[in-house]
Each structure stands twice: as C-alpha cells, then as structure tokens.
Length: 299
Image 1 (cartoon, one colour):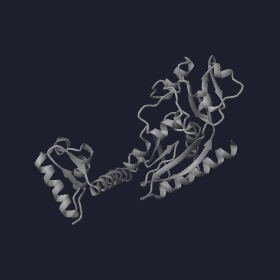
Image 2: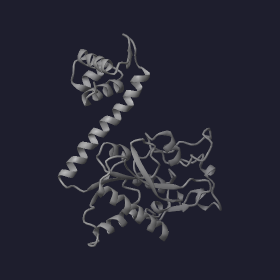
Image 3: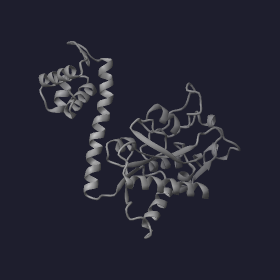
Image 4: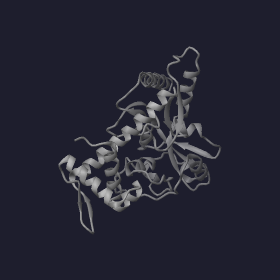
C-alpha cells in the first residue's frame, strides 16, 4: 500500500525532532498514536525506519532516506497548493529576490513589463526574502534570483550573468590607499559576517573561498542587512565584498571601491522548480535570459 501525505508528515516530524514525545506535541497527537503511526509506515514499506530504546533514538539507513524523501514530498504538496491557488485567482508569477541584489536587472524587468506592447499573458511580482530556495521549493515563489549556484535536486537554474566583486573600505582605512590589493591582505581585517550561512557561502561572502581552508582569518562583526553593513564600513568597523554593480549602486562619499586580486566574482542565477513549468513561467525565463544577455552586452 502506498503512503499517504499524513504518513510523510508524521515521519518527517518524528525524524526532525528525534523523539516520539516531541513529535506528538508538534502534531497535536498522543505519543502512542505517533508510535503506532511509525509502525504502520514500517509495515507498509516492509523495513525498519527507527532503532529505538528507552534511552536512544536512531534512524536506520532506510529511515534517513525516507526523511529526505518526505521533505521533497511535503514541499511538492505545499508548492502544488500554492501554485493552484495563484492560478485560480489569476495572480501574477511571484519572483523571490533579496532587497539588496540585482537592482539594475529588476528595473529592466519592470520596464519590460510596463511596455504596452509586451505580451499581457506574462505578469509578475517581487517578493523580498532571504530564504530564496526554500520559498521556491514550497511554492511561495515561482522563481528566484539568487547570487550563488543552488545544489538542489528539486530546482532547475540558469546562469544569467557574472561580474567582478570589489572590496568596500572606509576612505580612512590604510588599505584604501594601497597601490595594489590581494585577497590575503584581508585575512586580519574585520570582514562583515552574515550569521547562519552554510560554511561554503560564509567563506564566499567573507572572500575566503579562494584561500586554503585552514587559512586563519579575523572574525568581523555580525550583520543582518546591507544598510547595517555599509554603516559599519563607513565607521571603519568592517569591510565587505560586493558585486561591482551593487557596490556602485550603493556608493557613498566616505566609501572606497577597490579591485582585489584573487577575489572570486559574483554569478547571478534564475532558479525554479524543475517540474510543472507553466507557459507563463517559460516566457518569464525567456525574458530574463534575453534581458540578461542585453545587460551583459552593454556592460
């Protein structure tokens, strides 16, 4: 017998909480009911999912597999509901963006869709979020503009453009007047730190992705937005690395933009779910690719 959505939801909660009692509280069920539910799933699949004793809780290899698959099933179900509701209410495509990235490209898109000669069958709106991939997986957004490759089996993506990154430094900082700058010149500088990022992205944002993993580095101040970052840079309390177009758009009188040898560049991607692509989304993807090519040509 096939599993039902409620089975995936129950097991995903058990696996996430690593506890029948905690899962019961999260699901509003009794602990025996959760335990029986897991036993039903195991019988239907014909394999043990959880090794449990009075003191320990461990997922088996099959349980770990089901935990990952359950997430995809639940995300797909949520996305299907969200997309269907939008389609039924004739809402526009929703594109996830970060407020401080791809600003010039967003203006190009807005101009494209304000043109009265544009195909009226494609309309879109922006949603600002830091959880870009998750928003697309869950169907809160149909697509997103994201400044790093997404290694997600449920998402498809295309690279729209690439550009250099530069360092933003206070004009009073000693490095602002250096003849040449290399990325290892910043190892002991307070590069702004974005908490909660995966290690790979953390290294990228701090400009350490081209350096050896064991290269020591100073820990800069934690930031939660570009405005806060720029304020700390102006005060000489932080340094940050930004795509050239973003750095130019947010330039300020007391900030200096410097080219840095060895600093990796920035790549902008458009990502969407790899199934259920509508004709409207196909046309939007095509418009993004064409406008990105035009933007790169002008650059």
